[in-house]
Length: 484
Image (tube, rainbow, N blue to C red; front, side):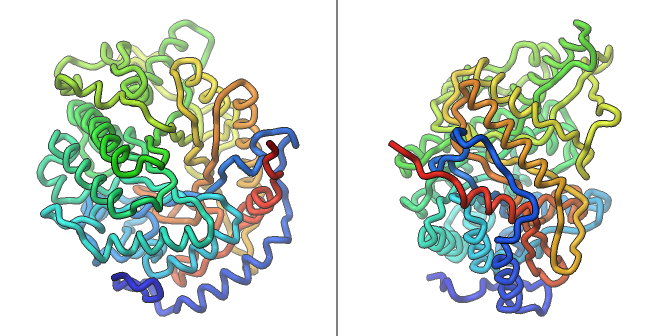
């Protein structure tokens, strides 16, 4: 049985003990009343009602560390290849969350959130032969129980990119069998967690897993092949559908769905060619995942854009499995795409000159979130929507124990307003999660980019709530009680 008061075995990142770290956290948390910039919405907005769910989000590989207490995953292998990670780092320690999870949950509580979105590490909870890893499962059960004690809803993501390496060795997401192994994993987790989970997302951003990982090769496992990418996408979607079957059986009272990332496309000019390029880009990159989920087919425009040899390996019955009803759609939004016609590739992307951008080089464009929500609501019969990730990497500086990230506060203000505007136009949005709870391992960019509303000193693991975290905590904590 996992001892909730015992640090999880695994390599430490430094000699700082948890008590010292928590004292730093507590000091910062007690300063939440000193909010330099406030976030506000119209008093009548549904987003100011306490029935609207607010939270912060993380992912296992990005924060957990303790890599020696789980099986290797594809990101361990990818990080070990020279030149794949911009700063040469890895996720062996990350934010050391495995050893600091109790303090991190106390920190989350101080942020006044309703919910915490996190992912389960597949290689931490299941052995290579498919049998359970009791210690790994017990870690998450203890975390879930502590969240329940704090009255914080658990939004659990089953797959946030950390495929066990032994499955990749057998073909990974190019292999149809992986979808069925994912179903077994989903069954194990949902049976073990019982009624502790408010919401399950089967997958986080299958676009990134398939397109970035198998089609262009800038994410793990680093394969650059269109046929591989489209096969991976299909098997990920199949895995989603198969997992929905077991979630509906094992956790019928939870909200079960999927999380997609999307960027609305705009033509660089009003020309017909550029407008068509934007529509093609949307279908090729993003509706490739949404169209099967809601309409049971791949977008015809995108299918026509790729050779027959790269068409997805659809078998009879697959689309019915994929397109079964979901309880919610999670949407991750960061920026828009601006496209122009390209005679060779069909579309090319442009970042407008002079536009405000984040440290990722992404344009800050809150109107895109409104347009995305309204457009999806028009194109599909949507279930309730949660904004499961929204945030920005900024050039943060820790000075005298504080991070004054005014630009990030403004980002949250304008994007929450954008969600409000979409709700006013009839979109059923029921929650919003800031990405991310804390600075963490940002995939191929290592530790160079900071998305957190909490600053992490990677040398000492001390957490410091940024001004953006204080502003969100103030906003979350001052909502009106729902009236009936």
